[in-house]
Amino acid sequence: MSRAALARPAAPSDALAAPPGALARWFGQGRVGLFSLARETLARRYALPASRWLPVMDTLVHYTEEGPADGEPLVLIHGFGASLHTWEGVMPALTARYRVLRLDLPPFGLTGPLRDTRGRIVTMDVDRYRAFIDAFFAALKLPRASVIGNSLGGLIAWDLAARHPHRVDKLVLIDAAGFPMKLPIYIGLFNHAPVRWSAPWVLPECIIRAATRDVYGNARRVPEATFRRYVDFFYAEGAREAIGRMVPRLDFDALDTARLARIGSPTLVLWGERDRWIPPAHAQAFAAQIPDATLVRYAGLGHIPMEEDPRRVGADLLAFLAGKTAAARRAAPAADATPATAGATETTGEPS
Image (cartoon, rainbow, N blue to C red; front, side):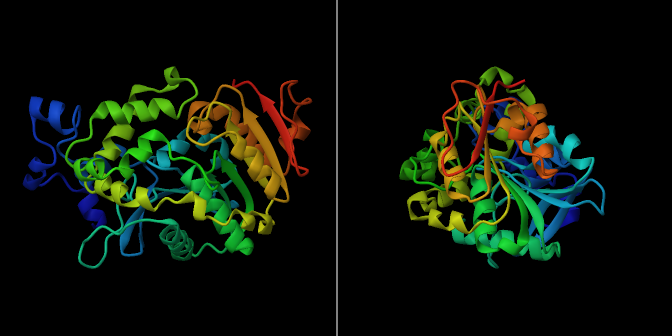
C-alpha cells in the first residue's frame, strides 16, 4: 500500500469493507465484525500529525518521530493488539527532551500484516519480530537508542538488548512478556481452530471491549474513544486472520530467559499490580535476572499503566532516563512491598 493509497478517499470497492447505515452499525464496524475496515479508512481516522510510513520487509510501517531532532533517540514498542497510540499520554513528557520514535508492530495498528511477494499474510513469531525490529532500526539508520517496550513489545525490547547490547542505551520493560505463562483468555481464544476460522468474519465487539477493560486495573478509566480505537484496529482488513495465525506461535516456554543476564543496559521494570494478563510475579523475575535493574510496581494499575496513569509513568520514565532511579527520588517503599531479589531496587506506590 502506498502513502498515496493511505491518504486517498475510499474507493467504491470499499463498500464491501464498510457497508452504509444500520447494516454497518450492526454487522460491520459495531457489533459483530462481519466486515473489515479498509486501511485507508483507518488512516483517515487514526493517523497523527507526526505519522510517517517507512518501507520495512516489503511493508509500509506506520511510525511517528517527535521531539528535538538532535535529542537522544528513544524507541517505544507497544504490546499485543495495541498500537503506537498507547503511548499518547506519556508523549508530552518525553518529547520535550528526546527524539521519540514509536511504531505500529505488524499485524497491528496502521501497519497491518506483513505480506509476502504474492500478497499472502506472513505469520509473525518471535524470530520474525527479531528480523522486523532489526530491519526497522536499519531502515531508520538508527545505530543506538534507548528502548521502552510493553507486553509483547517488552519481549521484543529485552530480546533486542540481549542480542545487540551495543544498540540499547537504556531499557524499560513495562509489564513485559517473556517467562512461561498461560495466554490471557482473550488471546488464547485464537488457539482454538473454530475461533481462528470464524474470527475474520465474525468477532463480536463485546469481546474486544471486554479484553480492553481487562488490561486496565480500573475499567472505569477506559475512555470511549479508546474502546473505539481498539475495536477498529481489530476490525482492520487482514488483522484478525494475521492474529489467528500468530497466536499459536506464541510459545513463551521456548524463550531462553537466561539471556537476560547478558543485558548490560541500565533497566527499569515497571509493573501494574492488577495486571491480569502477565503475572506480577514476573516483574520480580525480570528484576532478579537483569544485572542492573530497578523495579517499580504500581498498586491499582493493570497491564498498560502508561495508558491508565500516564502522568505517574511519565515521571518515572523521565527520572530513569535522566539517570535518577525511582528509589533515589522517593521515600522508602511501602510497608507491604515485597523485598526485591538479586540486588534489584524496588519501590511501590498508589497511582495518582
